[in-house]
Amino acid sequence: MNLSEHLQEFVTLWVVIDPLGTLPVFIAVTATLDAANQRKAAFISIIVSFCVLVFFALAGSSLLRSMDVSINSFQIAGGIVLFLFALTMVHGSNHSDTHASAETNPVDIAIYPLAMPSIASPGAMLAAVVLTDDARHNFPDKMMTIVTFSLVLLVALAIMLAAGPLMRFIGRGGAAVISRVMGMLLAALAIDLVLSALSDWLKLPPI
Image (cartoon, rainbow, N blue to C red):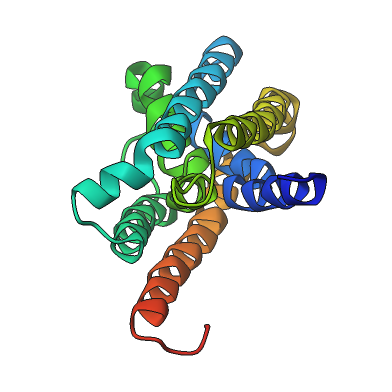
């Protein structure tokens, strides 16, 4: 792969992982945690996301073929999961902040919803499979793709670690507003994933 192809990969992975878009989700779901647990959630979410994306980069294509699952089916399933998560953000939590603060586990938040489906989103998993397709790429190319999304994940980590001052500025009320707005955007993205897969399957014009 040449430099322009690596740059194209970086842009693709930047868009699907969306480090900037992770910030409002991070603020919303860690609003009841103290600073130390927020940092813990950020680090764990990046580690989990890295492991998930590495798995899909190295074995995702083979796994889907062995299960006779098409890329479109995988994309539709991912879109549905992302949509269900978006609904929880739009409707908000039914518990009070005090109750949530006492029971919220930063590890649980790091795995869901931060790592999946926010950072290692269905789109990111799909990109990891497509960019490292066994039919078109050799092992060194796969390693370069892994290095590329590692850089994007490091940027996402840096952005989340800088969320503390912003959280103190906007407060919990602001975080609640951001959560609902981001939920609507994620819901729209989820619908777009499903419609794009259906459009490709039915050979319809791009949406």
